[in-house]
Structures are given as structure tokens and as C-alpha cells.
Length: 421
Image (cartoon, rainbow, N blue to C red):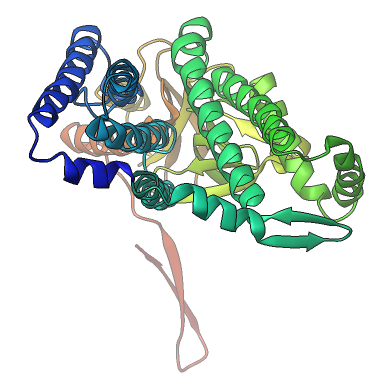
């Protein structure tokens, strides 16, 4: 007789009320411990979640207390309600662990949500089979289903156990790496790029160790992986050479910090801010919203302009032409004042005005000033241009139109020349 049948049989007895009270007491104690210890926990905590009960700690504590109560009361009488509560809490703990870790590590991943729902269905199905007493029979049937791989055979149960073991190891590794990155690297490493490469390296090592541990747990001979490693090396040497080069280049960039997240760079005449550095590519976002995906190998082997590496200041130049009868000293003062009118232009070093050439249409001056941020070039250029136009008009300084000469050939064969504006 399974736990559900016992529960139905004992539904009219008073002992069931005591069993329900014990279960509610275990849940209340677990909630109280979580509430007292998690009041100052962050909202993205895996242990406590956003509302205390949606973290991992609550179902784990409730499971421990309920199982202890089941062992204590089970020596005196049947406890079907507690027997049912144990698999339910086991499934809930697994679901909450997967959900909270995926929420922290992959906050916007749709694939993570699909994996979470799939695991939830499998966990609840396993809990129902456990409660109904059908789980041992299902496991025996899965063990009887054999698949041949060469000279060896493997059962469906072993495959499922391997997948679950690998999934559990992956979830734990992601949890540990996220905790190390948030708790340790955030305080120990101030540079964002260096913190990212350390986090990626820790995650890669933990995933490799965890994967090997999971394979060993399900009985896979790890010595057989040497053949796979040799084949993988040949593949990297030929077909995957570019891919491997991009991955290695990504770690080199993050380790050397030649490019950092937030730097303004120019690659193939595309200028923008480094938004993210992945292991295979670097994402550069321009000021107009366009994004460029640049392979990391290109950033290692070719010439890249980093406008933020040594000095964030950028020199902006403006060309201004005035009439030949203009007062050059007055023009220089007005252009300098126009540059100082912009909030983005730096006072030190001060703006400078140079007479570059005696042009065909007028005196050609060049206004030079510095901005502290490469992203401020466009707004500063616009502000200064407007200030130049306003100040020159107020001072009565002529901004000449281009001068052209028009040659008109008359009907009598004579050429008439007249200046045109």
C-alpha cells in the first residue's frame, strides 16, 4: 500500500490532524529561520530569493525538518502525509535551485526559462510516481531498455542519470562561479575587464572539472576521452583554427587590458564604445546606436585606435572663413570665446585659433579645442558652431560666400567676364 492509499485510509482518523500539524510546524519553522536570516539578503540571492519562500533554503530546511519528523514518528505509526510531503519538497528544492541559479546567471535567457520549465515537469512527474509507489517499477523498466554503442551496451536509466548528474553539476558550477564573481572578484578586482576574464576562467575550469566528475559518476571510462582529445586537437588545427584563435585572443585582450569595456575605439573606420568583450568577439556600439561585432583575432593582429587608453581627451578642430577686411585680432577673440561657451570644451588646455591660409574666398582660420570625453565630440562641435555663427554676426564680421568667375561667350565671339557670388 503506497503513501496515497494510506492517506486516504487514514483521512477520517484524528491522527492525521496531528500529522498535518507537525507538517505545518516544520514549514513554519523553516519559514521563520529563512525570514530571520534573510532579511538583509539581496533580491538576487539564490538562498533566499525575492520573497524568502522562493529561494533554495526554504524547501531544503522544510525537507530536512519533515524528513526528521517522519523518521521520529514513523517508528510509532504510519505517517502517510509526511511520506507524501518528502518527495514534494525534494522536487520543490530541485526546481527552486535550478530557477534561482538560472535567474542569477542568465537573467534574460529564453532558453534558460525553457530548461527550467522542462525540469519542473520532470521533477513533478518523478514526485507523483514516487508518491504512487510506481517509481521503482519505472526505474526497472528504464534499466531493461538497452542501447548498443559498438561493443558496449548502456541502459536508458544510465543515460537519464548521466544527463541529470551533468545538469546538476552544471547548475552547481554556475552557482559557485556566480557567487565567486559577485562576492570575491567584485571586492578584490576593481577593473571590470580583468574581473570578467577571471570569472570566465573560473567558470571554464569548474565546468571542465564538473563535467569530468559527472562522467566518472555514471561509469564512463575517462581514459577513452584521450582519443576524443586527439581528434579535437586535429579539428582545432584545421577546421576550427579561426574559432580557437578568436577564443584565445579574447582571453589575451581581457588579460592584457589593451581594450576595456567602456573604451572608445576605432576599427575599420567604425568608431564606438566597447560594450562587451565576449570570448569569441567584441561588441562595439556607436553613438548612433549601430553595433559592430568584431572577431577578437582582428583586435589582436590589426591596428586598432583606442581613444581612451592613455588619455580620454580628444582634440576637435573647426574651420572658419571670414572676409579679407575683417579684424584678425577680433576674429581670434570671438572664436576663442565661442569655444569657451560650450560646456563640453575644456578650459585647460585652452582653445587656440590659427590663421591657416589666405584662401580664395577669405581668411581661413582653424579653431582648436579639447573635450574630455570622446562621446562629447558631436554635441561640442554643434554648440561651438552655433556660438561662432552667433558671435561673428553680432560683431559684424563677414562670413563670405564662395567667389566664382563666370565667363560668358557672346554671339559675336567675344568673351565677357564677370565676377559672381
